Length: 133
Image (cartoon, rainbow, N blue to C red; front, side, top):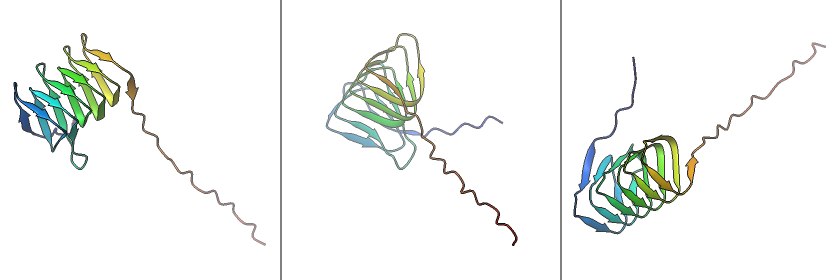
């Protein structure tokens, strides 16, 4: 009756008090409780979900299909499908999203840019009926 796409499983974790210096790409789902100083990117070949917890810090670009933020991001955020900003979310940078859910208390110091899909709808060619002469 109510069909919801199943979210990918969270298979990766960067724990609290762990830090990665450099870009990080992940498949499926990932939870960040630590710090990443570099770009954090979900695979484009498969659906991806990224959870940035209240304790987490990202300094760099964040990109995934579904992003849930309750921590701090210093850099642009690109949610290809859905972006959820929880009450303790703090973003310094532009935010691009297809759908947005923003809770009271979340802060964005940057532009909110909805991703508008352009439908290139080709119009059918009209053919006029020829006279039967």
